[in-house]
Length: 265
Image (cartoon, rainbow, N blue to C red; front, side, top):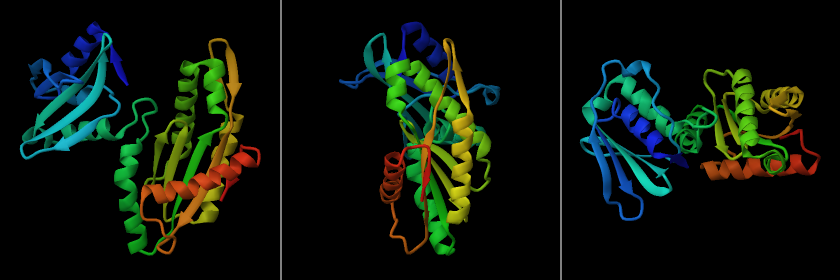
């Protein structure tokens, strides 16, 4: 959830005006407009970062692109609405900003679930059409709920971002991708990689995570991750994200039952 006090909301709107022609805030329940302001596209906004928002919905209409995100301002539930005419969205910088806003997880800066839903069917179709294997690694932080309960959600978020950073540093395949599926679960896509190689990659990730120390203001702690690996081809019967996650969930369940901190394929 995107939560702001009034001053933070004003700062957010001031920044968004540089990227979007219309910035609008609606009451979440009645959908009535409670604030609206026209923005001016800044000539130098290419060097600024667009503010990160979660749970963004993108819709493209005939003449405009519309983004909506739930926000809370001083306890009031609202909808932030950003409207961009199509002729603004055609330049490369604007399209990249839209892509990052919709497809990037605001906590870890990895791709998010929406990206997975969009990209995974494309990658499956390519692999099946070219008769190539495609492997997936599904990672889950062991005992993450216990970490949140014992150390608090601030430390939990640090564990998530630290783990994401390690994964990003180790996973540099140009043709693959890494995303946060949700919670403490991460999904790696490895086109043209067979199961043996995927297992080796997962085991390397597992070892590095197990050796890492996460420092915080009162000390440090270590974690482990469990991994499920699945290589599929056109005969595997996988057509959707849910089909794949169901397979990988079974692998993770086995890894947890066998003691955690292991790779199951």
